[in-house]
Length: 133
Length: 133
DNA sequence: TAAAACCATATAGCCACTATAAGGTCAATA
DNA sequence: TATTGACCTTATAGTGGCTATATGGTTTTA
Ligand SMILES: [Zn+2]
Ligand SMILES: [Zn+2]
Ligand SMILES: [Zn+2]
Ligand SMILES: [Zn+2]
Image (cartoon, rainbow over all chains, first blue to last red; front, top):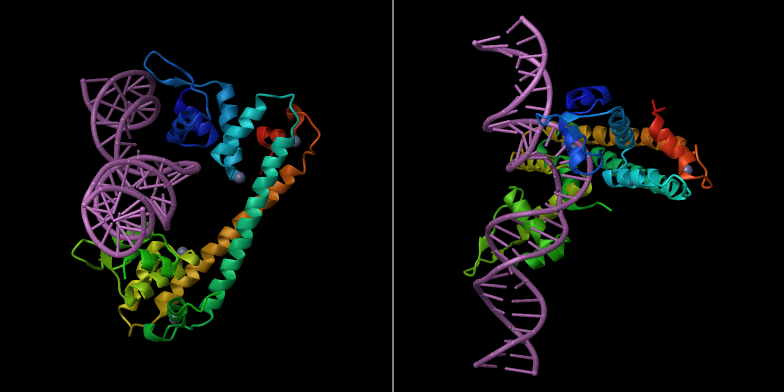
């Protein structure tokens, strides 16, 4: 199949497919005489794998690492699980950070109603006077 | 004061200060005969304002907008409060998204313990077989 | 036969910086 | 006086993961 069909069947832009190839995540496929890329079913699987990883916000580097593990099927899988644990930890810390941020923003927002002049806006005051901890 | 002292007093890199100037967030200061930038106390305040906004993850575009409001002190402040409301909504949606992500990751992680071969790793299986919703 | 749809490469843009290179200026020290 | 070191300048490229644009070749369809 050609790149357009691969793109449609996995739900990715053709540009993204070429990008993954350049980044070494997707092996370079054979070419037709006219230079068009020809993909096989294995490419579909490989690309779908990448997409599922990306949905989980694994980085391209992490995906690369997972692909290397796939090439050594008899090693213990601890490294894979560790990779995922680290990723989970990072997501949790992002959540925590955003929750702190949300509290600060809500508290700032509470310092003003909608019926003031900008001069007297509590939000702008809060941002200007650095009463942030 | 020169750029280094401004940078230290606000806790920013000198590069970042020049970057803000290029982006129109910080007004271009006067120059000494040798070309060095000379900053005033107003620049300190302005830069500190930007930094406090950035800590709250307001975008440079949003900061720009806030600065425009500062120039019209007798307008009603509704637009400012709306800007903040939108930002809070965005932060909350990020949190929600990350919480969904965390659940998916934890469930994937639960499908494997640390004592398997990569071939049998539940994590890799889950990523390969697309049993994701 | 001509238009529409597809393919190719190369390049730039997004965000908010951060890093590097290559050089000019100034004060203090050996 | 010569040189070190700290400071300043501009210009350019890199980060991540795409996405958009420009320019042109190829295939399919009407
Ligand atoms: Zn990760
Ligand atoms: Zn207000
Ligand atoms: Zn925002
Ligand atoms: Zn495992």
